[in-house]
Length: 350
Figure 1 (cartoon, rainbow, N blue to C red):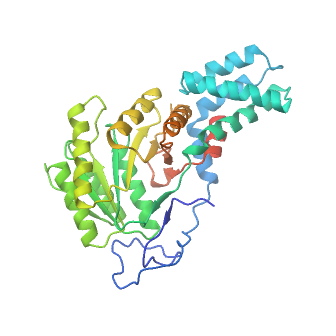
Figure 2 (figure 1 turned 90 degrees about the vertical axis):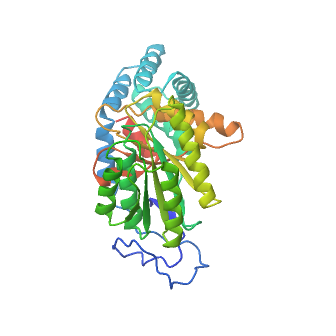
Figure 3 (figure 1 turned 180 degrees about the vertical axis):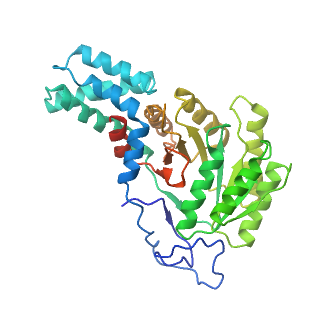
């Protein structure tokens, strides 16, 4: 069974509750028990259908490679081209081809059609370190900073994440710290109203000040989660990237252990540019997780292989891979789901 996150919150409502509570039970005693089981997730069959449809172009291109009659250099050359077209990047493509050839040799596979399953297994194994469960409740409130370039779907993703958290009984406070973009505060306010949660913001206010006020308010009001929506920016906008650092410093002043999560929202349509964004924002903020959006239409999805390979080098240097907590395929609230390496590999190969 999959879950959106593991939650360790004192006074948690019954797992069968469906209300969207925005306040915590102040009289509930602290719990010393193990984390309680979250409500069962929606069936993922419909989700897999939507994900498969979103990655249909890539799946068709890759599947065509395995329709030949023999496993030879021509097959691997076609596969190389297909993986590059899927935005896997040169290094990840070379890695997958080398791993696939080893699997073919080790298993004695002779039919091209059987190579497809081996490639799916290779991709799933590469992506496996990106699987991680978002955990909240170890701190109250859990402070989550969310960053991303303009147009990546950052604010919409925050709205969807808010819904998932609220549906599971967590009280959420939103911080409208995206004060640069016109109507950003209003857009977030719409999500706050839709999800029946509180929001802290001020028109034209300083992003760091808004973030500080939100963290302080979240602690005073007993909220479980504070989601901080930062301004969209490009990694090349150095003054805005410095503003992100300032927001993080100010959040730490309000809560010494915060932020507890620093998430980056990336657009699945941007190909290798998404990897460049991950590297740049990680250098600035120290990322703890990713949300990959818009894996529909023209999205190719192979960039996750490149991100996973970069994660290996990050781990080798003493760090760890930056996990993909959620992926999205559309605008509806149910179009954001937890990431599964095997599901993604299967969808990628059609």
